[in-house]
Amino acid sequence: MMGKVVRMTSAAALTCREKNMTWEVMKPRNESSGRPEPRSGGIVAVERSLSILDAFLGATTTRGLSELARATGLAKPTVLRNLVSLERRGYIVRLADGRYQLGARLLQLGEAYRAQFRLEDHVMPVLRDLAALTGETVTFQVREGENRLTLFRVESPQIVRIAHVMPNLKPLDRTSISHTLLHGDAAADAARRRQTVFFSAGLADPQTASLSTAIWGPPAQLCGAMNISGPIMRLSTANLDALSAQLAAAARGLCATLGAPFPDGMQPPELIRISPPEAPPPPAP
Image (cartoon, rainbow, N blue to C red; front, side):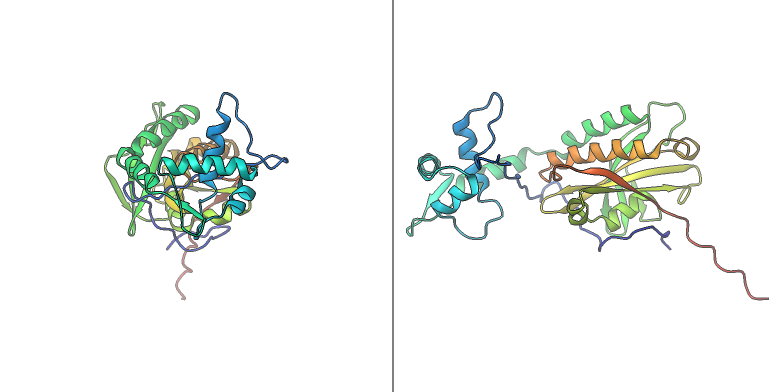
């Protein structure tokens, strides 16, 4: 039986796979002028073209010139000039009714990206940095049916540490990592601008404590969970708020790399302590 938690979120999300991920890029923020914010060292013309492509994200229909101008904050002549160049290169298609849709060139780029993408290349640097920062073992785990699988791990630099044998496939249990994989809710965390971090101590292993938070890919899809684990005596006396903040910051960075950035202005994470299950009542005399 799973331990009780202070708050439970919605039904479990599915595990994101390295080869079937879909990717999304957030539309750039506009300044009060309505125009895309220029970036230091960038090329304005390129930024404008990319903002036009971004305007198609999430669209289920074609886009007209006026719609694209409103979405990007650019003047219609500027949008039209960029559309001509994008159409010439196959990134945009102009239809017979004068409206626009994305071109096949973008699909080719997406397939090339997927062919070159290696999850390990993005996850491992984050785990190494977090292990060095916290001094504890850090893992990235995914859900496999009713089990959890450790895909990547970086050991603690300390002599006394929690070691994992790879590959490490265990049943979903009462630990923080299992609660994250079962009850993560990306939409809720993003809406309230506060990530959820679960903490468990001595539940599956009396010598181990851990903190875990979710890793998301678009569209609000659970890819896995990042976990800090260590000896229960060390973590139980540590500054859990500080560890939660470090874990949450690392997770936000990885989510952004995977194409699912959190909104700006995130609040400190919510730390939820998983309590042990209640002991059964003594048998009646």
